[in-house]
Image (tube, rainbow, N blue to C red; front, side):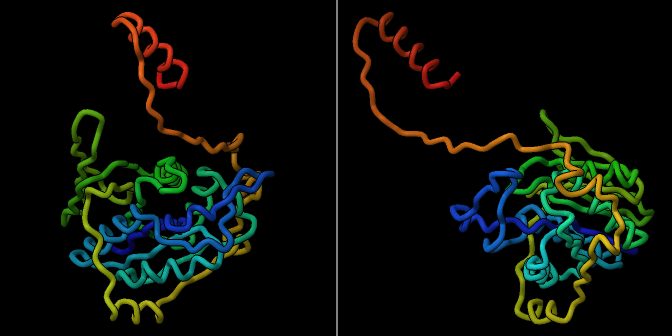
Length: 265
């Protein structure tokens, strides 16, 4: 094993979500001034990479597309035990949807050189699209497995994974390199030690702009994003008690009317 890449996404701290707002023109999240944390499922991806490295060797590289302020979030991943980090940061990347983001991450992977395994969290808590891992695999022309809940790397270089499917589990085997997206059932992320926090301060975070990656502007940022948010609305739900009187038939009819009225079905 030479190199494992973990795609890490900084997301707004859930404790601060009441401060998150939307840009009325671009319909994208305004993240400035909101503290970021590691996307929870990405911690499981880091743990998976560290567990493989501890047995088979190699290095674990964190890869993230985010503003410069994300270095503090990357330090948290380095404190868990990752070897180094690469931050892809440029104003040209702002407003990227999942496909444009995948283009940027793919460019970052190519910049790194030989990569044996790319691990993503299955989805992020701010977007919940679960698309980036598969799009990244497609752009790199690599096999992709999602919803991974167990994995085992054999000495012959094959990776055996168990993935969750709609009505059960599926067990698959494939040769490296490949891209996997993991669920929380896979493992329990290790705690960050004080020694790990101190060690993270001296680990490298390489910051690359689009001058380094040279990605065409037509496939990144808002211009390169085929998915645009049409709008957002805040739904308010109120609880109340209502008594229905009458015969059984009358009550059933009134109940059916209210079910349709309130949009339950």
